[in-house]
Length: 305
Image (tube, rainbow, N blue to C red; front, side, top):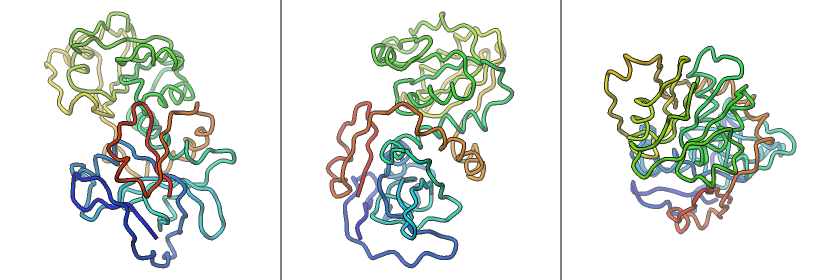
């Protein structure tokens, strides 16, 4: 069989022939891979900089869609401990979930991980939201931000506001309101934001510092940091925290437990087939080295054997 492998941190993965997998244990199931997504966390782990990168050689991937070898059942699986970019994988049974009939395997491979970012934020990092809540998605045109719009509405959001640089792209996403980033993040005009119950942030950095300083919500606001497209650091004056009814949390493995994800993921998977089709760039596993660093634009790169 073949798999992708990172043999030196920071280099593109190579397509190599490897030994066949050992017989699955009684706690595992063998899956024939159909598609796996190249998510932001996958790239971060492959760089060696992520706290879950592990050791070399590193097989990229944290999830995927495939068929159980024994019975052909279409499934999704997630695993931070088993790379997914291979012809076959042995995965602990507790990490494998059946997909609803009619689910598009390639779409599922591309969007479930981005969907989990907002899903787990809503499920574990915010509390006691009012009915018909308002949510601001910072980085709404990112792969994760796009999916978050649909999930926020499925969870009861009445008003969904998007913030991003690309005004024309936001106009296609079914948002109730939009805020366009200025060339300099600190010059973005947030005055139209109004009251907001939840902020899901995929951008971070100076844009977030200015947002939180500008926030004038009359309601308690729960801010959740999910991604850092604009930078890993945030400088926030203490006066911002003292002067606003603001709760700040982060969302990711560690902020929530894998057991919490396992408990709620079936509810998410039932919604996946109804999420609007997202832009996907599909490539073969044998071409992984050449496509790894190709710009995908707004499309999520998905690899198939």
